[in-house]
Length: 212
Image 1 (cartoon, rainbow, N blue to C red):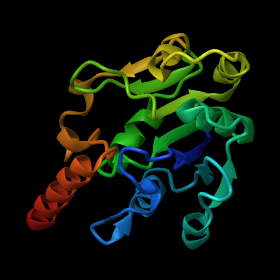
Image 2 (image 1 turned 90 degrees about the horizontal axis):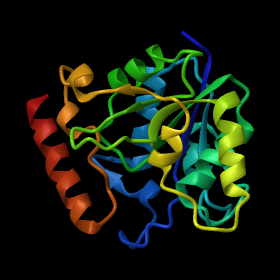
Image 3 (image 1 turned 180 degrees about the horizontal axis):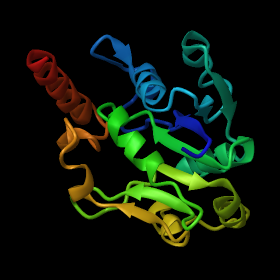
């Protein structure tokens, strides 16, 4: 498998949730801790780094997880800023990026993405069952993505959505049929953005706890 550095994005302002997503508890772990555990199981040899929006927002989670942490090089650019900072920090030829607010992403799914990394592509990205690409759970070629992302972030205008940026990288798209057999696949892309989302995640977590 190609050498891959991992970056967990925790830099969102969480305006809709009203508190920092990274430190929200779900099933006895914060979302940051859950993401760290999942990527550690998936890519045990990967260097794992948290990416935060600014120093005031975050540090304790990374310290507790014994992981590195960096901060957005360009402020207030959302997920694009996190991706930009990750690409700039990378020492491996590829990076895997995961937003911490996908608490049910599995190590098996992450390994599937990593196994499809190839120099033929600029990114490896899953397609959700609704047909949308999910760029915040994806692998990126540092060489191929860095220039494009830098060009976009340097422009003062509002950047295009990440899925459009990914589309310019000749991505390898992992379609739902390719991961439907994985346990819990129906919940992989459950996203915690609001209090209602957190309530739903709590229901899923309780269901999964009963099934274990």
